[in-house]
Image (tube, rainbow, N blue to C red):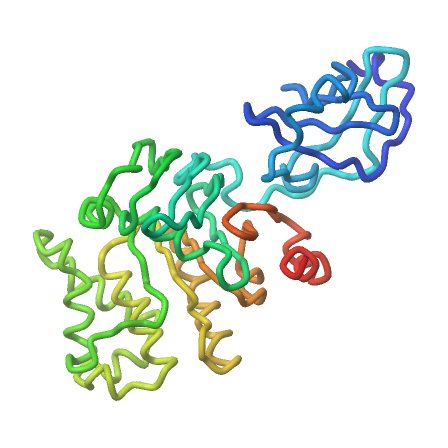
Length: 330
């Protein structure tokens, strides 16, 4: 291959797309289509007009989003290679896929909300699902945890098709959601709230006590207030309790919906940092957020707009505030 690629011509800022069959490609200024092969090089295969009817998928990461080197080569007469250097592989990117949504459609009554959502989250990642109000973020989460029926498409978790699972089976298999608005039991103590969270694990002897101590390690304030009524806690403390209660259910995938909502910035920062620690301790996390600050703890950012996944961000692009703002605000 070294001799074949001696004469290089730089191609800058190629716009990469993904076909329905997963093929990654771009189209150059001459209208030639280049498909990324298994060897990391993309080969000229056809004129762009031949594929015009299909068009790019709405979920279209570019070369940086794929985490691959964007080397490009034609069969004749020259070899072309992107000017971009391959980005560092983010933690979890080589891990097995834990959650995959494929063209998921859903809604409420006869009102469609999701119009074909596709996304992949790998074991050990923290994913942040970003979007404005009404984008379909919570609806996506409700489909994942079995609280809302999926109309079409498939959801796969840990190698199993979970599209038709209900919440009971989802929780029993490690999909646990910390809902928007915290929703603690205000007339029960902190300790009782945590105990309720461990209900699905009640057959495991000593588990609840061990996990409660782990939760107190993340949230020392909860340990100090174990006998205090949850309704008397501050907003930040209630959010900590809601996350702690979800952790009691032994999640493989922890879904945290709008953790930052209504909290002071300093508390939001603390909550995000604790989510980072939970992830580093081995729990895969999906955060549903409007707050772009959540990307500081993310391995992958998934941007939704009007019921569709429109962008995947990885690596340095997660820290590009201008790009994120542009995507969110259109």
